[in-house]
Amino acid sequence: MADDHSRPASASAQPPIPTDERRAGPRRRVLKTGAIEFGNEAIPCTVRNLSPHGACIEVNSPLWFPDAFVLAVDGLRHTCRVAWKKDRRIGLRFS
Image 1 (cartoon, helix red, strand yellow):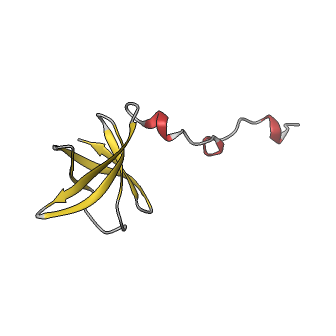
Image 2 (cartoon, rainbow, N blue to C red):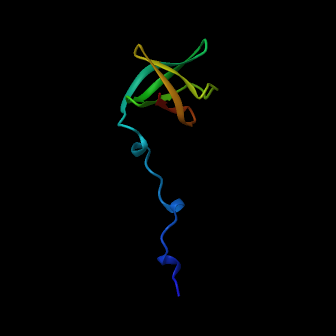
Image 3 (cartoon, rainbow, N blue to C red):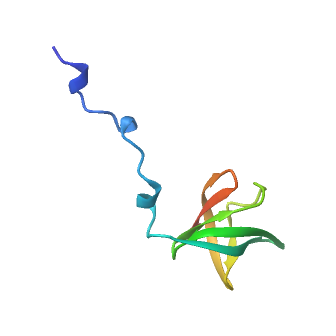
């Protein structure tokens, strides 16, 4: 007679992959002023971490903005897409 405890755990029972391991490379912590640019609009933001592949930003309020836009920081402009949102924090993937 088979014991329920001897069956392998399903994929949904596996712990989630840590966010750090899904990133293309390590991000470094920063505290910089940036801007979300789309159309003729620019929304100020704070850049919390940054890598060649993406960034985490924080906005003053969770306003609507498109899923793809330009992040301007340190005189550079990065075309990006929203990877995730949580409250006022937004994870970005650079294109």
